Image 1 (spheres, rainbow, N blue to C red):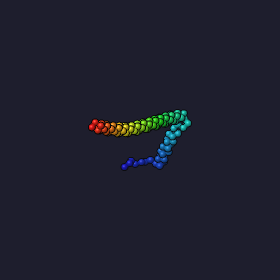
Image 2: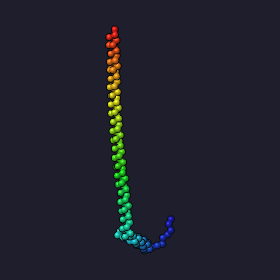
Image 3: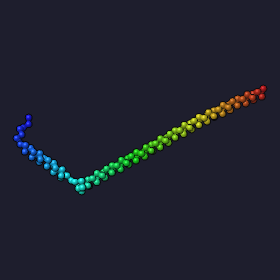
Length: 121
C-alpha cells in the first residue's frame, strides 16, 4: 500500500498548476515555424524529399527501359524462332521434292534400261 499523503488540496492544486506552467513553458520555448533554424531544417527536409523523388523517378525510368529492352529481346527471339521454323519447313519441302525427283530419275532409268533390253532381243 502507498504511503500516507499529508498534502492538502491546495498543495496538490499548486503542484498541478506548476506542472501545467512547465509544460506551457516547454511548448513556448520551441522554435516558431518562421524561425531561421526551422526554415533551414524545412529546406533540408524538402531537398531530401526532392532527391528521394528524383532517385525514385530515375529507378522507374530505368525499370521501364529495361522492360522495353526485355520485350524487344523477346520479340526478336520469337521472330528468329519463327524464321527458323519457316526455314526448316522449306528445307523439309525441298528434301521431299529432291527425293521425288530422285525417285522419278531412278524410275526413268529403270524404264530406259528395260527398253534397252527389249531392243537388244
